Image (cartoon, rainbow, N blue to C red; front, side, top):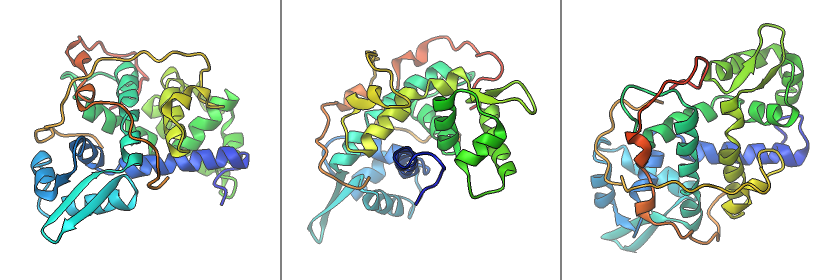
Length: 281
């Protein structure tokens, strides 16, 4: 079923990316996925890695991740059950450093350097706003669009004025710009910078290797060479400090290593504030 007035292939692309974001955005999901990096673990071992979760919170999270096709539950016998990534779950993890790279460049800086996991959670909060992906998609492909025209494309079956609450939120988040009331809308520099993230999510949701992200028809940059950044392990997370807000398949396990991911070494750099209007934490 179409969700926008865009061509069917584009509409399906947005729907797949929206679904991918919905799998990982719920609170603690990314942290649990990171805790599962490496060999399969028993429930008690996972609980030890996410010890801030209260009794009864971990099991439904694991069940939801299993239902989403990102985690596999293996019952060796009645007293030995382990959890580990599916191929699809493992293939999704390399998208996370792209999110941190974007966050470090475009999110407003806080007084204390944020761990990479909190940067990921902040970014996911922005991208899962209602209609956010579809609005950003249209603005990327059409550059400047009026609110009324945007409404006809993004929510064709709704009153066109309903476009303004999500638009105002995206402007407040720093992903969309406008000159004022009655003026067209366009992507901000930060919104345009989401290309690698959306391209990678689209490739993953189609079962393609992430190297295909640069070829995305809307968000891609053919010929661009990704610049890898150093990462160090932060998988044994302590209790977080006031954080902000396609199914299982045969994709091969990528050749990344636990030590490559998550807590960015750049956190020690001085954090200069962005100009007003940048994405908000």
